[in-house]
Length: 342
Ligand code: FA5
Image (tube, rainbow, N blue to C red; front, top):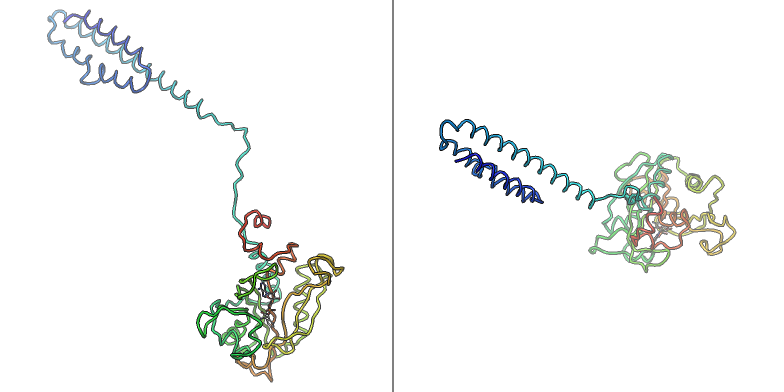
């Protein structure tokens, strides 16, 4: 074995290294030449076959050649990696001057916001929140509220029956009985917010599910004027210090006397407009002094204790607040509509 043979081999190896144009090609070049089983190793091993007096020079020569090949391999590797990186950077070029994509965040439903605002106003007046079931006994929803079976007043709400004795509550009033029974016999001052269900024709003003907030105040010194004060304060907190309300005589089996409360149109301030159907007033809620039968069913002596109750529709207030004309918009889940209230 002569050193010149190794030099000749090395010239060929350098030449083929120069033609490598990818990291894969480079890896197979390395496999062929510099790896343990590669050609250079074979030359290194052949040192034993060289004549003893030439062995030293041969060994040094081979090592020198090996060092050069390794250095060339390293340099080529760096070159190819740099080239690949440059190519990748060029293809992944990001234009940092482009505007960012809007990051959409969720928000509360306008009815939830309205409900929270209403609860906040009553909380400031000393009311606490009492939750009562959505799936309710017929007894609680009607009979204990002075509406016996087959009473014509049942027609006031077209109720969804789950079974003969169980209904989807058509109003929050059954919570009156539950609250009095649970929190009595002392004074009670609660609001009952929640969803109600009625089998009604869906229209711009009516849905088959809608929120009500019921208010109940029971105590020895409770009077009808408290009802007026609470509701006037409520209307003024929501719509400003000059807001007027009006009470009209009405009928509910569970209150006596009963009233319906109108609010002076918040849009036209009583002048008459589309929203108030040119009357200047909008119906807001039903209310009254609790009927003695209801107080008794709640566990109170109606000769000693009086109560006031009211039930208001949350969507009605939201319509007024946002000057919307159709309640159905709240339940269509159209993000373009809902996102306006965040
Ligand atoms: C009642 O439900 C009585 N329980 C209210 C009450 C409570 C009277 C306590 C006396 C004492 P009414 O059916 O009028 O009453 O409903 C009250 C409010 O709920 C209405 O003024 C309206 O704002 C809302 N409401 C009723 N039905 C619907 C409906 N289908 N869609 C949307 N809101 C409704």
